[in-house]
Length: 114
Image 1 (cartoon, helix red, strand yellow):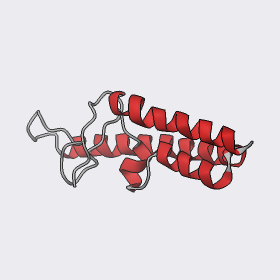
Image 2 (image 1 turned 90 degrees about the horizontal axis):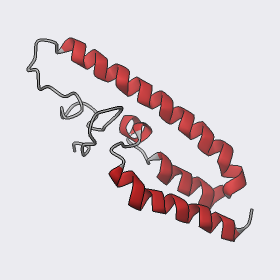
Image 3 (image 1 turned 60 degrees about the horizontal axis):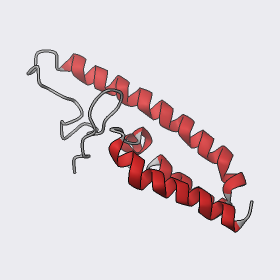
């Protein structure tokens, strides 16, 4: 694919990042678990570096890794909840400073603690 197609795809990703992602109530599980770039930012970089056609299978692999990270965060959250059964009922593992403060599933999106 040519440079124009690459720019169009990148523009769509940037539109997603600016207008959809901030309001969808979720954040990238891969970024939350591994503290790197979000999947959309990673995809943008891959497209800029390799082009749309070459980046596509890499992006699919990244989305699969993100799905695995999501499952791992859910498991970590469940384990933390089990460990803290006797704690205050308002305990939320995604707001605890030592935990990943990122939303998954039905939890509201929260900023990542620093």
